[in-house]
Length: 452
Image (cartoon, rainbow, N blue to C red; front, side, top):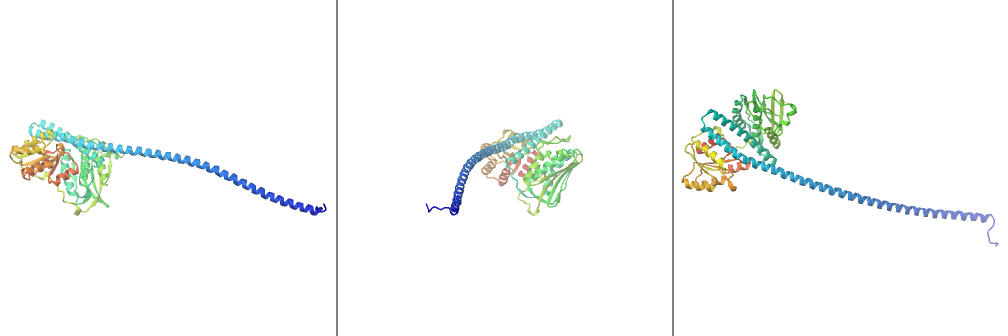
């Protein structure tokens, strides 16, 4: 036992060993605690990851459902858009077709009235016929307006923008509207211009026709003035009247369909389509239309166009001025009429016979050739409807007649087809075209020209 430490040295050594053991114990405990914390943190992270994974799955599912809903909605919208376009196309096609068909009996009615006018000697009967003719003229204007709107909506009316000289256009409008203004006791001044503009000839003419007709219709006293001026980089054509004026609140509404004002006592109110067509045509052409008006003082419509060089004006299309042609005698002229509409054929024959013509009525090229064989002689002129039965064309019928006769017989096309294609087809065959409803004076002037 003598080796056992005793005394203060032994106590110090024991204390040192105890301190050392405490440090080792503390280090071990710290390591164990850190390990526990890491395990707890790892477990917590694992739980968090699982929770986030569930959330991501939920959000992905929700997003997928939302995308499916959007796709279903888009499919529904696409189908609705297709149905709307199909319905609009069908509506426009039906309207174009119906309008074309309505023009046929209207043409027959006006021709019949013209023939009846030449037979009647009573002044009272003449007044009644004139009243009926004006009513038919209003119906014709409505049908043409509806046809133009339908063609625009269907995309069938495409502008042919080119350089157009204003002077001949203004002259034609003066000849057309001076009698109308005079009948209402109004003055009409159309100031001609040496300038040219870029536009579609048919659409521009229709815009100015509608503006002039509208101004004359609603003006009671005074008159109407049309002219143009250069304003900046544009040419402005202005139509001014001394009519009742239009209140500020109504100045946009009058450009909508079937919006109309109060007509004069000597004229009847229109159908409210003229200014709608003005706005539609101007929009298609990129022209701006402005209105300045004061109630009680009148209105001014301004059409703003892009100027063009007169040297660019094409002289390929030559408009025959029927008003300048002199009538020649039609007595004894042999006319071959190819018309599939019985009423129109009968009315046309009555009109031509009233002018002293000898008329042979037929319905097709085969019928015409058979009739020629029976007559044993060549006609002086051929008048053919553009669209005959069973898809047959009046152009081919005229060609067959000329080939049969081995003569370049004078001929013309009559049609209720206002399309650009119809006009170009006839032009390629070198034939003049009269649009239904046919104006008797225009028909007589053209026929006289062909026979001369």
